[in-house]
Length: 247
Image 1 (cartoon, rainbow, N blue to C red):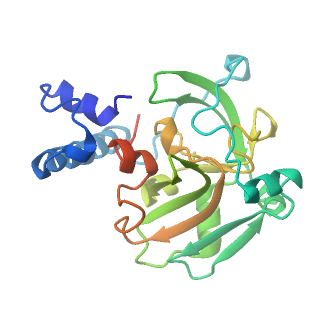
Image 2: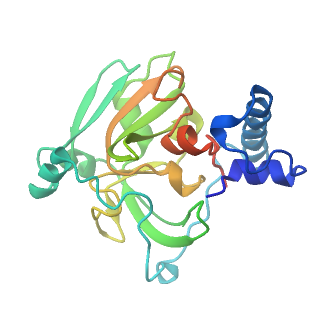
């Protein structure tokens, strides 16, 4: 699988394209980091920090929406949640917050909701349009009360790939974007297991691997260093994907 970061390097002259992330020199890593920051700066400068991803009509929704990534965490804990329809599931919110939270699914569904029909763009080259519904992530963070030192929001998930726990992260600009929601419904139905039940992140201006499924815990942090391998997400750690996957 070719990362968008590698494609960006190739487009700039083909330098070092295809190198394995584990064998890149410090100089190459510096180039990649600079490319990532440039990408983020340009997108936010041109489009604005609150620019919306395109939204579609109901008749434009895709007849089939593929399952991306993990189809089922298949852990004893997750399977137990599925068996009792997530009645005992709680979304944990902690880290650099004034008031840690433990939110039942029923409370998430009772919060003010946003529904949006958007296009999911996968790094593997496919896209699909679907409807998502859930509370704004911003509302959840405001209920917890971010401490001044918080700079990033980390999503810890129930699934794992290759033995590594799935996680993702975004900064506060994307966390407070009006289309960033914690979705519990897809196409007017509760999320299926394949699509990330009971709750997944929707961060609509980024590629699909940023839309963490099976979210169990939200953590506010000052830095991504020291969280797993420090890349800010499983695929960033594992395959050198861009941390900022804006589209």
